[in-house]
Amino acid sequence: MKRQNGASLVEFALAALLFFIILFGVIEFARFFYVYNTLVEATRRGARTAVVCPPNDINGSTAKITNVVLFNAPNATGNGILNLSPTNITIEYLLPNMTAWTYNATNINGVVVGNIDQIAFVRVSILGFQHTVFIPLPFFNTTFTLPPTATQTTLPRESLGRLTADNPLAAANRNCF
Image 1: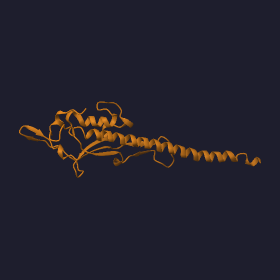
Image 2: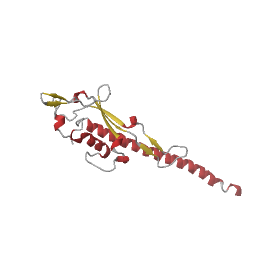
Image 3: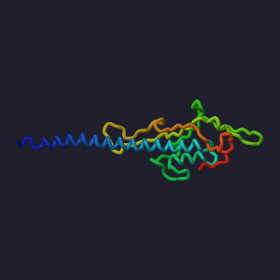
Image 4: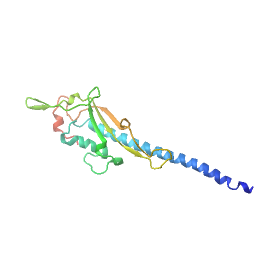
């Protein structure tokens, strides 16, 4: 009987080790899922704002859309969600074939008319986000970068800051924030 005194302690140590590895793995997975959902929601907010605001940098709208992604407010400053910076955010206006749109203004009878009718989609992405695992696990890298396609939202264009479909100048005169 005396030879079995430490057996239950060894069994408990092995079972507890397995239990805590599983427990911390579940906690870390839940934390990663929360971070991922936060990033996806941020890009969704930014894309939703971008499809209803002017596409060029009239009234600083691109910087304000970036702030909506980072802070959920167009004029906020400081540290963004999850320590993101404006350099992590890309806002792309796309043609129907998903290539990049570039602003081109023409002067018609003294009125500057842009080519925003060509825009079909708006894509907001978070690039270079690095997720750090709080609980170090053996044989696993504790920091990894999310791929850009994991944290992007693409939406079809809407008003793009125009009051009516036949009024291409409203974007220049309307402040969407």
